[in-house]
Image: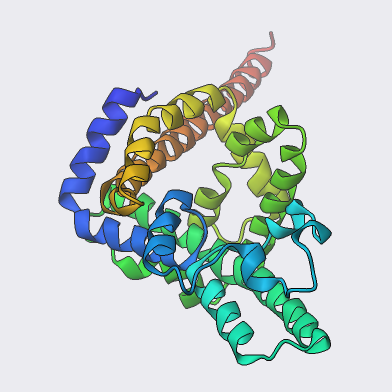
Length: 288
């Protein structure tokens, strides 16, 4: 069992011992994925000519923003790499209707592939780095690319795709979306430790780990609201330099605790079953 006070104290100790590596990992993830909304404001501020809103960037003039649903646009990663790619393509064309539409389609396909085979896998790699750094101070930054080194991409991509899809569907119910957000929150950590786990088992294990703990995870997130607001005033700089490393060093600790508690409970159940079996055999032998 953990408390937020103890957890944050431990996280501050971890940051002091592994500060620059944590910051480097968070910076790379902010650059290469869209998982840090506040940090993205930093790039929007310093690269205004290259990073535009998704609609302004990829939609040609003859297609209105209203013609595409907001749910569809949410699947397009709003990150620096994809934005730069689409910006380059857009500037290289004279924008004939047919050509622009074709490149728009290719851009959307590229964005989806980037999200599921690069962005999602890097998020799993980020979890692997922080879980390992909890026990090993000299964890290498390259851990975020461990799935590529193992050349094991298909299964983690599929599990994360299912997680994203189910979360989007549950978001339509609002309350259900919040609950499922915390129920699915352990899936990247589970994949970080076992990338071969099946989609069904990953979802089941995440559900078991967060059972009875969703409210505590929600309160943990709420405890960072002050830091998140402060990050907005610094255009995301504080988010990269302190808030995100601090938050990530906090959030891997509940996973470790939940996992250990679940495994201990399972061991107790196994021991109880064994003791019952031994006692039954003993009673049979004594002819009771």
